[in-house]
Image (cartoon, rainbow, N blue to C red; front, side, top):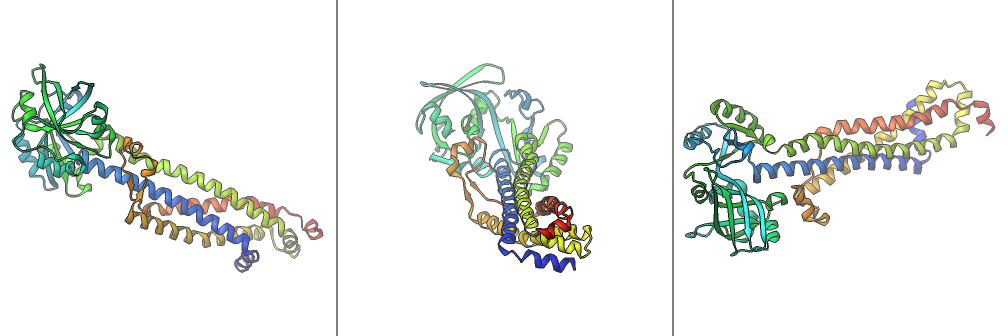
Length: 404
């Protein structure tokens, strides 16, 4: 009887019931949309770190990461490369020569990280060629060329064809300086790297550092993302004298973002649900006050307080069951559309987004694995918000209500 009575009651005032259903649907849609957006931004950032910056794994001299001195290069690199190539999970290998230095022009100086690369390997590994906005990369037959970031070029008032001087310490701790000509300017989705990362030819940089044929970094990519940890463990056992790190250790801020994004999204969902709870509470209280004479009559006819309490809760459950599927479908449809076509956030400012390492085109993903927790929050919210109206109903005095 409670079920049929509750079902009839919610349709006695269609407008009020529709308001609650729409509120629940929009609340759930907002929660799903927030999770989908955060999921898309997080996965986009992780993909950028892996595909364009660090790779899945990097190998260094044990002291290089702490001091970043050129003298801490990888001993016997050919043997290390051969060992890395034998790990079945490894798909790509890229080698680099690194040095911290100063860039000097007539307009001033700036601290930079000089990265010596093999052009074809780097273009394939970090997609550097796709980031180039001016120029075409290193020109054949010419020496001492450099590729710099767009932000650094603007800061130092440089353009393709301009000359600049790079200064750094060699392996003997002697100051070395050399003039380079800018052959290309690139722009990535990470403005912080664009302002400090300078690419040069690996062999030329190694000669200037006094360590011909040596490298400081081996970057690796696995066939699948979930193979990275297994490959790290295997490489650590095969190369005990070297430091092997996953992208999570190389880019701890990205790993921290991945661990905290759930907390931030849940906080936003709770805020949305609190607002939804007040809406349901207000509407249900109005419904109870309007039906005070009816509640007094059924109480006078012998319906127990427990049944009246259950009746109000059941009405809220029915309203939730009607609103939840609509909210899920709206969230899924919106996430699916923007996952395919992308959500352009360039209106927020490309420079602002890149300063945090995010691309302006985001591809939200429907958070299927978090859907149960969101549904639980919605159901609990609607039930809690119906408790006050339910207690109000059972505390009404039948005689006074019938006189109303």
